[in-house]
Length: 433
Image (cartoon, rainbow, N blue to C red; front, side, top):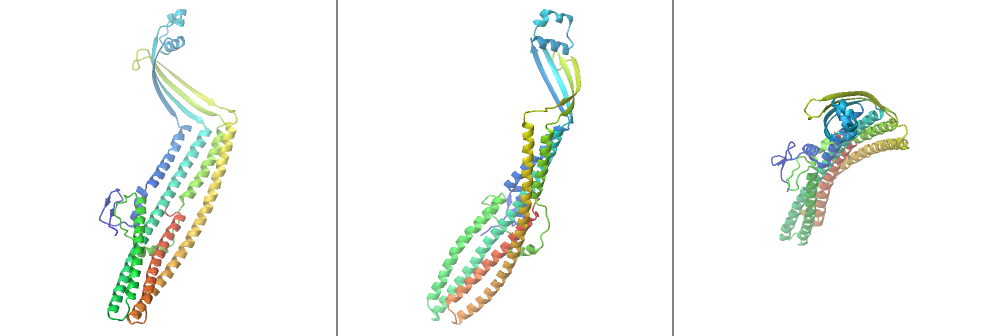
């Protein structure tokens, strides 16, 4: 027996006032599913890549402070010059060769601004494309989560429907057994009829035990997708019968995140090739420094100096590493383009397969509905024939079993229609968000 639960989408806490709809299950999974949260966190990490690469065109500001005491002749000579405390007496040979210990407190502020850094510029662009690819991949992961929750929801609904159908069949079989007992007491049938009916009851009870276990497992799987404890009571508010009307509507268009991800991956790989080439070219930057030196302490006044300049860095030959980097980048671009082609072909195949499965599921449901109607009519006839003595209990039980099978088939057909519709939406990127 499934117990009602109220599931709050704002808080992961569970309350027991309302049941869980499919829409509520999807919303909760989008915020609570741990696998999806991990994927989104990875996408946020990738989004920091362009910020990390922004040093290619934005200024870099550095600040440092230090205290130093030394008897090194060169160090003492330099510290005195920086502090503007150098005197004529410091030019003596003894003072130069064997200076007394001297202390310097210094603070420095530096600024560097790149003027030309092609490798860094292309690297920043590649990081931006990689971040976009990760974000698109996270959207696809969200779509996959919605699909998994949808399928899990209807799997649980089908499993519960089977239990209900078997309960109905059990009640009917028990009624047949009681009717056979009454007819036997009247001398109209033998005791074999009741025994055959009770054998049918035993078989249905065994089937129900298995079906109940499957229903519990289906609910447990759904709880796991929703990050709910296994002990949380759960009732499905949407039924297979009521939801079936939505599945025949045309699928609206969407944008598949996996295709967007591989497309961005190709762009990132292309920028990677350019960055590898640009790494062999010179870079130019302007720089400036402000410094303060004092003999008494870091907060005391002293002497200051400044420096400005322009620098060029070029490594025209670094072994064969530059050539290797270009070849590696080109191979990675070729792999990215191949992945894009494979993903595009796979997406087309998935859409076509999902459309065929959806159409087939709708046809199967129509056939199952007709079969159930026929089984209901046949059962009415079999009941009448048995009451009038025109048929045996075996015929009645067989027709009752056929009705149960037709009801189970119809439940499975409705489930398949809803799941096929979800797969079609997923194939078209409708769930990606």
